[in-house]
Amino acid sequence: MKKAVLCATLKSAPEKVWRVVTDNAGCNWRSDLSKIEASADGVRFIEYTKAGFVTHFVITALEPYTRYTFSLENDNLRGNWTGLFREAPGGGTEMELTEEITLKKPWLHLFAIPYLKKQQALYLADLKKALGE
Image 1 (cartoon, rainbow, N blue to C red):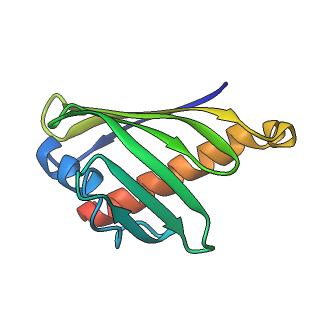
Image 2: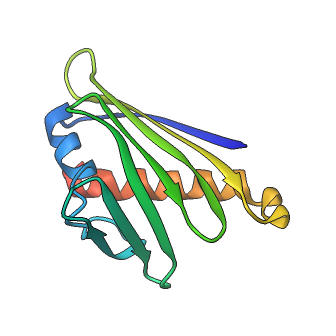
C-alpha cells in the first residue's frame, strides 16, 4: 500500500472549503477533470480526467465541515481518500488530505508516490484558486 499526506492551512472558513471540496456536481474548479457524474443517491460518483481516464468513488464518511472519506478505484489502483478539516487558530481552515492506494500493476510502484504528491499539489492549487486565495 502506498500513502501520501498533504497538510495545508487555507484562509477560507471550513464551511466554504467544505462546500467546494464536497460538491460532486461541479468540477469546474478542478483543472484535471472534464466532468463528474454523481449518482442520484449522492453516495457514488465518477470522475473523468481530461484525457478520458475514469475513476469510481463511493463516499464512506461525510461529517460536515470535519471529515470526508471515500473509496476509489480505477484500472490502475484502488484505495481510500480522507479529508480532515478544522478551524485554524486565528481563522481559516487546517486541512489534512490522506490518500492510501493499492496498485493493480506492479510496474506502477516506481511512480506511485511522486504521482500522488503531484496530484495532491495540483488539487491544492486548484482549491486555492477556487477559494480566491
